Image 1 (cartoon, one colour):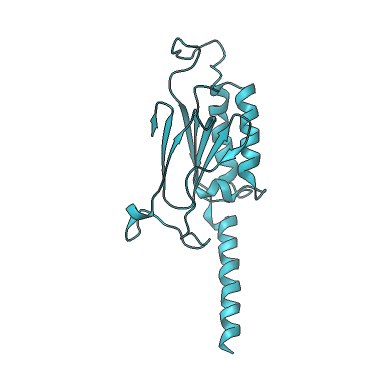
Image 2 (cartoon, rainbow, N blue to C red):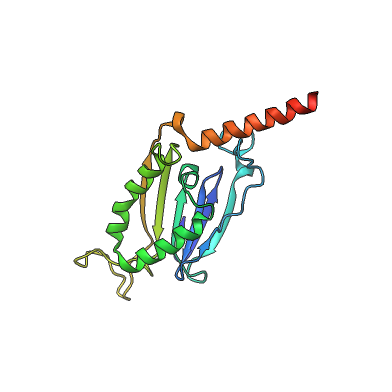
Amino acid sequence: MVLHDWLILAQIGDGDVIGVRADGRAVEPVPADPQLDGLVTTSLCGSDPRADFRLAAVDAAQNQLRAVLLATDGYGNAQVVDEWPKAFSEDLAGMLRDRDVNWLASQLPSWAARCASSDGSADDTTVALLISPASARPPAGGQGRSNGLGGQVGWRRARQGQTGRRRHGGLRRRVQARRAAQARRDEGRDR
């Protein structure tokens, strides 16, 4: 939820919430979930989903947030670099300086599709990008709503979802490998 300069963020499960600062540094405002183990995730189907939500209230102006990426786990699992939030944040900060909001919104479908493809995680991938009015370049031709103070009104948002073919999923292969390794360890203990 966006309330003036405040972002109220709630998360359940193993997706990602990545804040992008003006200087390109990544911020992960929502606390990590200690229940996630790579095999099992918290969800709305759990026994007490209200207790599984993690919350954060962030003053976007004070924290110099220029954008926030909200993504399902298919997005993060498709990234090649382990420290992908840092690389993503640096790249997006540069794009926010160089591109307008319509261009960024037009790129979301390809970002999600690439992650959902068999070259990515092949997992369902949904991404939403919130862009701060302090950093949003108006669309070419000046078609943005102005607040009369030189800024755009409200945080901009764009959303895109893609469905991957789960049978080819990178995450699924990692889960299967972890289960096989655990079975071998268990088998060794039984001897």
